[in-house]
Image (cartoon, rainbow, N blue to C red; front, side, top):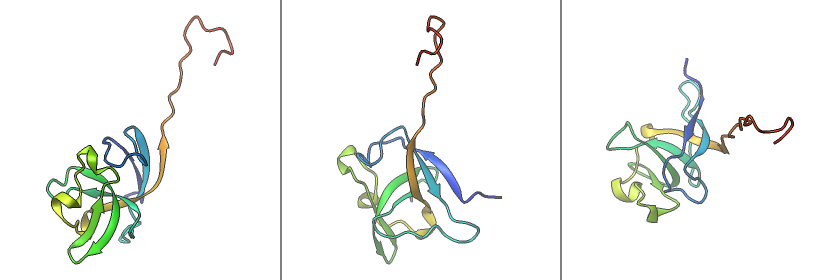
Length: 118
């Protein structure tokens, strides 16, 4: 069974300031045969058209006959987006981002910390 949602960690800076390296995303992949359904302005995860092992985090700009035009929020960060490879076929859209979160770091108290110390 394939879960309709998955989590993805942001690794690059092409979508700053909205998404930064280390952010985690909850991504809706769609349920069953139902595609995730995207619209301009939404942020999606897509497979790179030239290397499907690579996932891209991009904002949907517009629809073209060949697919979706995906753009980076921060193109000066050396972004790899539709400006380099053209529209992305709908079948390469993995899912749309539902929310962003940061994973908390649990602090392990040192031996010298008094009881109840933060």
